[in-house]
Image (tube, rainbow, N blue to C red; front, side, top):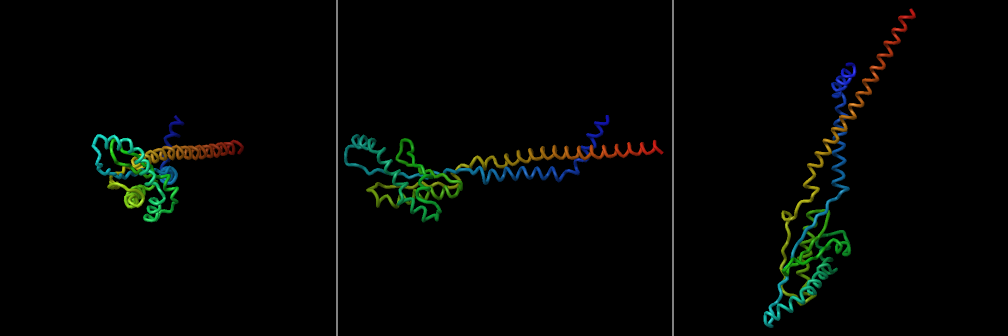
Amino acid sequence: MGQKILILNILKNLRKQLKVILSITFLSIGVVWFLLYFVLVPEYKATSQILVEQEESSVPSAVADSQLASQVPGINETYSATIRSPQVLGEVIKELGLKVSVKQLHERIIVSEAADSQVLNITVSSADKELAIQIANSVAVNFKKKIPEMMQVEKVSVIPITSDQLPTSPFEENMVFSLGVAGAFGFIIGTLVAFILEMLNTLFKTGRQDSQTTAAKLQTVFK
């Protein structure tokens, strides 16, 4: 019975430890927010596209198709190398004012072929969503400008990407959920810590009162 009363008193006095509970709750949310924004940095991938249209040949269509099929892999490899060339990437760095080297920018860019088409995908990775879009579009535009100087090329069309086309990062999608879980976890831990502190405080007071009562009884006996 005495233990039940003790626990009830502790629960009633938890309000005194409200600052401890709230402090631990907000600390937990702050730590998770810091990790998501500054440690576990999300990576965005923006993809712009270029459409390379082949010139019509005077040879019969059947022959032209077979020749084009055999040449496309080599042509696309050449385009890929041109897209990531210092001439193109140097212009991108200058245009956007990037503080990276051509080599560093080269490593962020992947060029791939769209299936069964003459479209090339230019994919750029960056921790900044808008910057990834700007770089991808700038690479495509500068490739279109530079390619006539470097090769006898056919018509090139740019298909830019916009911010609403870029999927959100998993970190953005789960941010509210993660912070909610962190807050709930912090609240539980804070409540447990407050309960332990209040229990120790109550036990200390109870022990002190018992000691004073015992001392008073002893004084009464020896009088």
